[in-house]
Every structure is written in structure tokens, then in C-alpha cells.
Image (cartoon, rainbow, N blue to C red; front, side, top):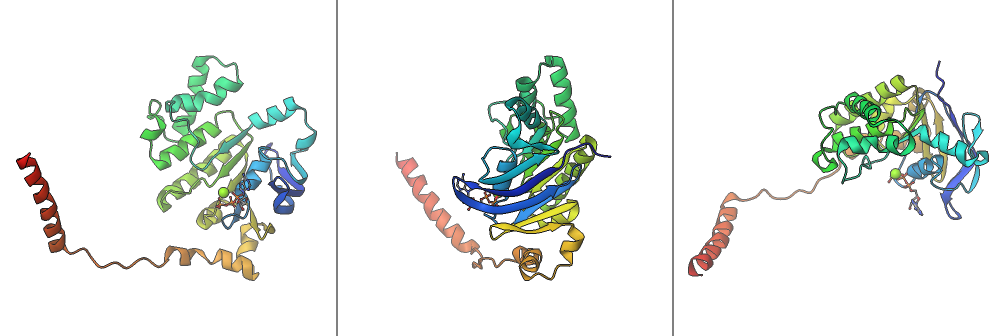
Length: 282
Ligand SMILES: Nc1ncnc2c1ncn2[C@@H]1O[C@H](COP(=O)(O)OP(=O)(O)OP(=O)(O)O)[C@@H](O)[C@H]1O
Ligand SMILES: [Mg+2]
């Protein structure tokens, strides 16, 4: 039985300043389960995460973590909840000037009084969980895209979170790496007993992972429930959304004539010949 808190949104309207992006959300992300928020670009998925993280003030309504109304917590209580909330940003959000081990150690150094030896023990543990045990000393720019995402995940997990929020964890990865990262997220959820909310536009990930699905569109929540019920929907908007993936993959491509090897050779020779002359002359 999970002890991770559910996240409940009550009549929540989110946006920037007075401009509402998504209105009147009444959603409960179940505790200890993996929920996915999907929707077209600009539908407000990242905005929702920012509000759940309290990085943006809500326009109206309430957010509860378990039984805690986030608006009525003291600063200290709020801080406690934030410390147990891991976040995985789209690009891993690693600091370029720090080695991987120091990037991962950052939250521990900032928020705990653990000794350096204990910190490094946790850092190594989390990095080996995401199969980066060999990369402690590397800088972020020495990592591949997939490695950077896994490193971001290691950092999100370093404080033993009870809630993990992920924004587009598989974007920019090829289908094989996406499937591997999906698997890793599932393993981590079970290992740490977390409530996970994952924002994605990757329908394959949604189908593979989601216990609970929320779809945003037209400024509101247009679906919430299980993937099984969603797959059976006859709603035209949802059907269009669900059935769109194959079209995207077979998007039309530019048709350019093939390169003519002879032409390439001739132009290159001209160009190189000119340079040769200049160099010899000078
Ligand atoms: N800081 C901001 N200030 C004002 N408006 C913003 C801000 N950030 C996002 N928006 C607007 O909010 C709307 C939703 O943006 P959001 O980033 O939440 O979309 P999204 O669903 O995450 O899209 P994508 O799939 O492209 O990441 C957009 O119209 C965007 O222009
Ligand atoms: Mg986004």
C-alpha cells in the first residue's frame, strides 16, 4: 500500500497574470500511481506543472498534496513538501560548469547536513540506478541526450521524493531510448513509492505507462480517467488526438533531386584549384 500523497486540484484555474490558460480543473492524481498529462502544444501542460510546483500563483482554486492545502501551509511546511518533490525538466537542467557527481549532489548539499562521504554514497547509488555509475566525473556537455535525461532523473531522485513531476522526459530521444527511459521511470516509481505526474506528447509512452490520463485542450480538461476507457472513446476530438500518431510519422518530406557526383567533383575542383593557385602564388 502506497504512502505517497495524491495531488488534488479543486476548481483550479491556471495561467499567467490574469490570463487563464486552463480553467476549472477538478482532478485527483492518485497517490503512488503514474499519471500522464497529454495535450497539443500550447495546451498548458507545462503551465500545469509550474502551478503544481508553486512556481506560478493560481488564478483561482486550490491544490492539495494529500490532505494539505498548499495555500494554507506555513513557509516551513511548504519547504518540506517541496524538498520531497522531485522535478525532471525537459533537458535535465544540469549546470554546465559542474561535474555530474556535483550536479547530483547539489540538492543534498543545499538542503541537508549530511557529511560529504554520505552525500557521495547517495550520489553514486542514484547514478548507478540510472546506469551512469561510470560517468561521475563527466561534465554535462560530455553526455549524450539520453544520458543527460537519466542524469536529470538521478538528481530528481536524490532527496527520496514522494512526488516526481516530469516534463516531456522522452522528448528528443529515439523510440528505443524513449522506451528504455519509460521503463526506468516505472522502475523508479516502484522503488521509491512515488506519485508521478508526467507531461508528454508521446502517445506511445502514455499507452505504456499511464495508470491515469489527463488530456488538456481548448482551455480545459477534456478527459480524465484510465487508458482503457480512453482507447474506447468515440468523442471526435479525442479520437483525432489518439489517432494522429501514424500521420505524424509519415509526414511528407521534401523531395530533392539526388546529388550529381560529377557536378560535385567539378565544382569542388574549381574551388580547390583557385585556392591552390592563390597559395602557390602567395
Ligand atoms: N511565462 C509565460 N508567460 C505568459 N504566457 C506563457 C508563459 N509560459 C507559457 N505561456 C503561454 O501558456 C500557454 C501554454 O503554454 P505551455 O508551455 O504550458 O504549453 P505546453 O502544453 O507545455 O506546450 P508544449 O507541448 O509545446 O510544451 C501558451 O499559450 C504559452 O504561450
Ligand atoms: Mg511544455
